[in-house]
Length: 222
Image 1 (tube, rainbow, N blue to C red):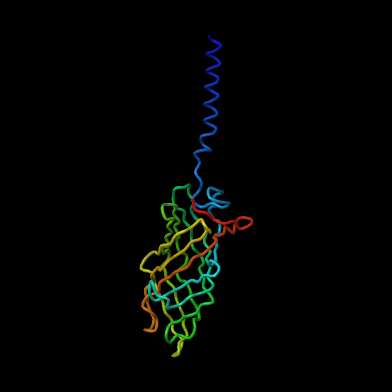
Image 2: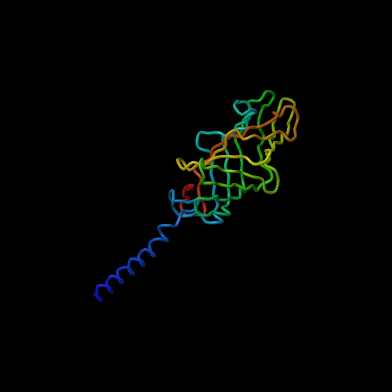
């Protein structure tokens, strides 16, 4: 009887040790931002994430949420640094350091060309959530979300400055590792009447890459 009890106690102790060894690994959640696939390796704080426009698409600043009159750019890219990447579920935070536009054209009456589109007041704060809908919130840090557009018109060169009323919202997708914004409003802050009253920003960037890791792997949201 004593031998049976000893063997039973040993078996229970071994089971407890095995459970203790396995449970933490099983319970460990992936970070919000990973590379190598969903649930992969966590993007480290300090990693630099970049993306260009999805091939064949445009970044657009249209004069209405549903119209096609305004400015569109065939080239655009961003660069952001990861500042926080907690375990999922949660919200990862990035610092948007660079956001550029090029090869822009306009179909606004009186405008003959687009000289430049410049994002002001960088850096911005980009919060990436893994909650339903995979929402993204781009918020001001040092100043309002502002874009300056310089246009050449039949009467000369004009400068139009647009500001978002606060933050703008977007979404991410793991299908092609993209981040996108749709019809996010920027109201005219300054400029002549040739500048349209508001610019509605639409663009999709991807794949988002972690350029701090060898091979520039794609970034996923968990």
